[in-house]
Amino acid sequence: MRYGRAGAGVVLLCAWISLTTALTRAGPPIGIADVSPPDSYLVLAVDDWATLRRAFEESDLGALAAEPSVRTFVVSMLEESRLGAAELTGSRGLVEEWLKADGLKWADLAPPQGPAGMSLHLAPRTPGARGSSVRSVVLADFGTEGDRMRELAERLSDRAARQKLLTFDDREHNGVEVRTLTPTRSGGADTDLPPPIAFAFVGSVMLASNDPSSLDAAIDRLKGERIACVGERAEYESAVNAHPGALIHAVLLPTAVLAATAEAINADASRGALKGSAAAAAGLVDALGITQVRTVSLGLFLGGDDEVARITVEANVPEKRGLFRLLDESGARPDPPAFVGADADGVLMLRVRFDRMVEVARALARGSLSPDEAGRAEQQLAGFEQVLGPLLKSAGPEVTYATESERPFSLDSTRTILGIRLSDTGPLTQLLALFGPQIGAKPRDFEGNTIHEVATLPVNFALGLGFDTAFLAPARDIENAMRRSGRPGTPRLSSEVRYVRAAAHMAGEGVLFSYSDTRQTLEHLYWSAANYEVLSRSMMAAEAELEPDESDSETSQPPPKWMSALPPIELLLGHIGDATADLAATPGGYRGKLVMLKARKD
Image 1 (cartoon, rainbow, N blue to C red):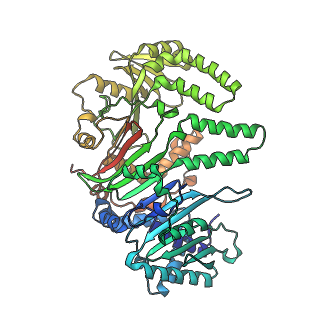
Image 2 (spheres, one colour):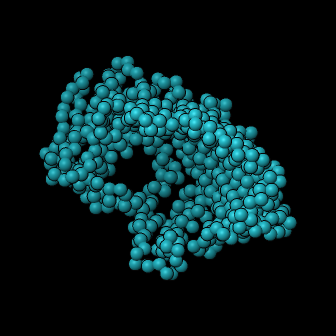
Image 3 (cartoon, helix red, strand yellow):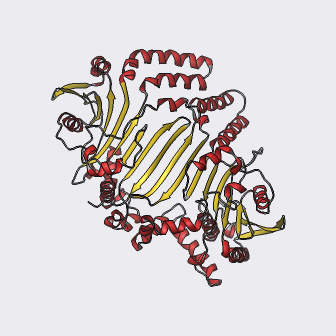
């Protein structure tokens, strides 16, 4: 259900507070990690908001964000967000009226000047409790604007109370006034309301939370008292230290969430089947290796050598079990295979241990099934291994997925191909000889290689075998891949200047590499936006098994308004370039990064 216009105004005001404080990290003198509960599972933090703001304004992203057409596009996107255009526009106008009464505008709302941040934790489970158990703590140091922001927050909440949009209660804790805001239903409307939120100012630092005890503890910390906090946890400190110099840190600590989830499942599980299901779910999560993830952290950097932005990623996984066993850690260079053409939009290269799939499946069965069920699963896996075991041992670890968009664009101009390296083609050849006729696969020769076309499938699908690779794609695309692989002079992505430049920003070795050509990606996106109704009718016709021109154009969805507000494509391409990603294994987990390069000169 939607918020009413007045209620949405309260939400929007709270959203502003969150947006100005949400992307943040703990730092001197006191940051969000220093005032957040020790069982916090997510921390977003900035050491110095003023430094972040200055870095953003001086970056290519900041210059792009300042363009009028980009601002118009962002507003258009927001107006079609979950709140709805009318409510968002109306509630913004309501808050603007409040500000105008104080001689202020949106631009007069001060951003933080020092540390800022937000953390999330789970409230203790209580029997019969309703609603979300997620609790938050927000911190923002407004520096010289602290007194003004405190007075403004109090005046705005006073006015909202007079208009019966909320009620508030004032109390004192440790010499600090705490105000709790509780939204009310507008006109008795049956609408969902946000939970009460309390805020307080300790000097220039604003604190806000929907958890009274956490807010009180944060006040105590700012008043100089010693409290337990997430910043003292060794795994949190290690995660932050993995991104030295980052403007923004984000740290996920899933252990608390997993423990709370397991507790909730067990508490809700009754006797019999449901209780068994709870145990099975817990066992599956453990068997998948998810319980071994101690932290996942991100760090944001702006600018740098030929870079617009960089996001570094670090995962602490001391014991790699379950799905992590399927990643090959022997290391590989970011070199696309020969079948990836020079015109490729993008490529993803992943190293997979196919030979461990049965082993992992057995572990999942033992961890999540009853002894009887696990026994039956073992028998099925034994049969599976007998048939497919030789193929799994010969497959990989190199897996490559490439995309290409033919020009001029059309409904089916996007071409994709999946290639899996084979150390021995014999097992796959034998399986195709045995089972190919049963699925309607018909082999044919192509330049000394074999392509098996499956005419019984509803899509144009084929399996090619050649150049020590199994290809999965439409037959025409497999032919092109085989031509590139067998003809040394054929242009390939690996030798393109744009890819060589991008690869220089990837790790030397890793388990995953990704590259995306931003120009080609945006050009296809803009074509899709311009032809939205044609694409919509085509998808509707496909679902109804009709020809595209047989579908009812009157029932097709109109394009979203934001599509007509897209900024000029050359404007975007003047500020941003291609994108890369990589992931490498470490003794204690994984390390990777996502990079947006500066605009290309071609």
